[in-house]
Length: 489
Image (cartoon, rainbow, N blue to C red; front, side):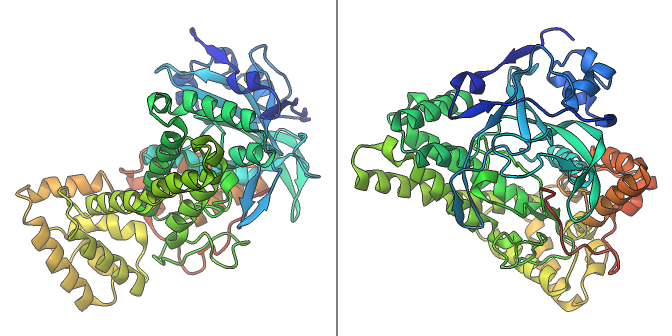
């Protein structure tokens, strides 16, 4: 494929922003998956498309002449506790490529072996988390959520030791960048103001070039990241998605979803739902995600204070004013997304009560989150159909449905059009926890990728579902419910 354009702008910054490091070869790589659609967007030469050359590159066994592998340095607050040095402990940036629509993307190997930031870890990734990230990140993309993406997944031919010995794998991840709030925390912790300015200028030029023309570019950068994260978290919430480990080192400056560790889409709606087995206090529960995002952004603002103004008190005042805008932006976006899910296109503040009452009803009845909204279109003209079957409290449901149908009647829009809009907004299929677990078990224990491939295909078109895949739309039975997910590090 022609016009493959490669750059190395982060590598060109040099230390301390990243350090050179080569991947560690693996004994017997095999293809698991390859994303030809994404490869075409990146204009990746077909020499590397699910070929021997591609297998060598995406397993870390051979470096093409366009790769300059680097491990990115960052710090982070993990469950609220600051760690001054984390960094890419099992990931390597190969290159930055310019896509067909002139956007810059990182190509990164994840699970490529030890780096200077491995902190006694093996630098490897088990097969299960690689398959999970491949499925969920590509599903998020299809759902319209800003996200890192999966270009390739390769089996390494060896085992990694976690709870047990598990097959190893390497994921090739694509992102607008892998720069995080923790990246700024790492530089700020060193107290080198010129380096901090260099890095901030780099991020502005790469992600938010319009900020360079503002009177205070660094304040504008803070505002841009706040706005991007406010919208991103609202999108997560509207889909019932729980990130699971919203540490500052897992929060992208580019406003993308990054690091799919103990993540999950919830089944029965519960605002306090947690899936990560290490989140015993519920810090990263579904309903806490806006609060944690705001807290993380405050940590980002702290790193920028010396750049905002030479007057410390004034810098805090400026940053605080921007940070205080997060809740309003997040709540407005969440309301817009949620009203669209119930067929309302001209959102008003009064609709907030309608959304709140529906969520409360879903919680009290343990209704499945995704199925509730997907079936709601069938209830537009008949409140006894569709979503009605999910509510044991039929009187509560009928009371809400009556108010909802009255609200829809104020639109002046044909109800058939409302139903179609709802079906185009509420997914029929999501990467449910139990389905991913089954796909991982088959792949790990029987080398069987059939369920992974079938699920991946269905998730590419989440708003339509083939009859043969009707089982993917069903919530888990009590026996199928997955209480905990694991990050795989």
